[in-house]
Amino acid sequence: MNRIIAKIRKTGILLLAAAGLGARLVSAADVIQEETGNRSGEGLQIVSGVKLNETQPKTPSPENGAMLPGMAGPEDAEGMEGAAIIPENPERGDIAGEYGEPVGLDENWEWALNSAIHTGTATLYRAEEGPDGPGRKGITVCVNAGHGCAGGADYQTLSHPDGSPKVTGGTNVEGNVYSTAISTGTVFADGTTEAEANLMTALALKEELLADGYDVLMIREGEDVQLDNIARTVIANHCADLHIAIHFDSTQSDKGVYFCAVPEDWSYRQMEPVSSHYQEHMALGQALTDAFSQNGYALFEGGALPMDLTQTSYSTIPSVDIEIGDTASDHSPEACAGYARALKDGIDRYFQENVTIHSLSAYEDGCVMLACKQPSS
Ligand SMILES: [Zn+2]
View 1 (spheres, rainbow, N blue to C red):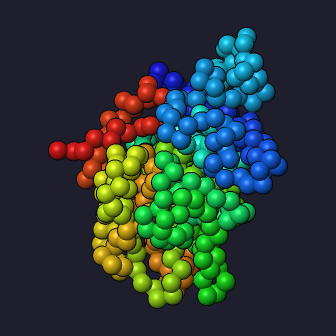
View 2: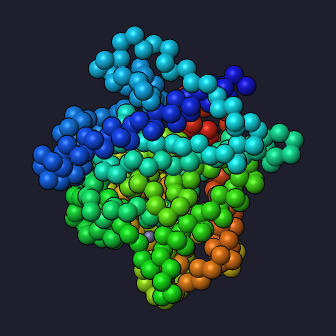
């Protein structure tokens, strides 16, 4: 229980730190724009003075520079000891699944300042505890409804954390050092945007997960959230155990489901954090597409297409971009609910096959890493 409280305190710090940080980071970016006319990741580096691969502390607190609302900046934080004790939210009670808590980007997190758009917040939901609830698993799944970030195509961010060029094409061209911060997404023939269909599926998946005891970090729950692909990925890295980005492809053939696999490129697979995590990404993608297949959905190209994505390039937890279909695929609410059930099956499958859960054992390590990622023997 102490561990839980410690974790809630830490999360509280994180959550409350979020609101103030967004404004602070953006004002830095605005300065760059005024001075240089661009808001690229390179510009942000200059202002922040953060080296690209510098390891940052994972647990936000005033000691390591995280900001709390109304708190003085790190340079004049003297006399602020004690400000980090944040009371638990009295409204939350045991039915926290109904009450999400905002989670924003902490500038101390590794690669946070490579992001260009991060004034928005994700929302963390907890599964119900108590005799009537499903019992919490102690696993947080980040559900990332792809796209839905107005203005995202106007900005460029570093494709890779180390500044190396992309090894495959995709939305952005092979060889590009910079990629679109977050693109608009495609549109179905009936005018439904991909962002809408992604969201319908994401909201259905959230309900499936909470009902079975998973905690859920929702990146986007409305038409728009001001978080680009790097911000989404870095938040997921620090606040979830698994990251699933939901997409539909732009083709028009109802071609089936696939995930964006980690390219078999030596330099790419040598690069951190890809090197340490690509096997997890591949295992997760495999589990998800297996579940779709078992639920009767067709797979495209065996369910895996190599793609060098920003998400994959920055992920330090098992992380997959799954393309559920394309602009000719069914995107009715019923269809999206079906996709969500398949995704939920895939998540269950991933944990059954790949991970030994040591519930709560990681709480003291800080933040909200809830499951130890150890391959089962
Ligand atoms: Zn997409």
